[in-house]
Length: 164
Image 1 (cartoon, rainbow, N blue to C red):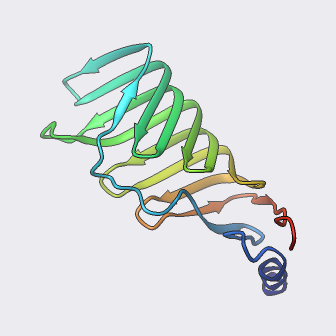
Image 2 (cartoon, rainbow, N blue to C red; image 1 turned 90 degrees about the vertical axis):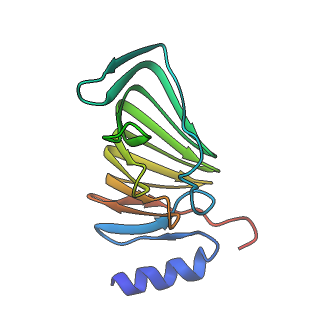
């Protein structure tokens, strides 16, 4: 049955980058690969630095930008590399919004590993691409490949583009 669903989806929605199945879905995210070498800009209402564990805690309307990717959350913990030469991970919580190009995702929590380019979104995740949407328990975005995988109770809404 999964092959039949995929076949119908490909025929009807051939311009949509979404592959849906019962428990796991793979799709694209953003406009392609993300350049992890770009600077990371963080704005917030408050900042607390802990030099003992190489971290910083940004709170209050936090917005993080790298290239065209944006992450917004009430609270973001930044963990620096052991030599403090750059950022290792970003851990966002309290309701997270991630956007890249025309794609956007919402979740309760998110973790972004700048070294690997992997972003994990957890908790009531909703991913929107144009007029299509997909939801699940977890979304893992690979910014290197420009792809995403949705797991957990996956639900999708596919809308054909006009004229198809």
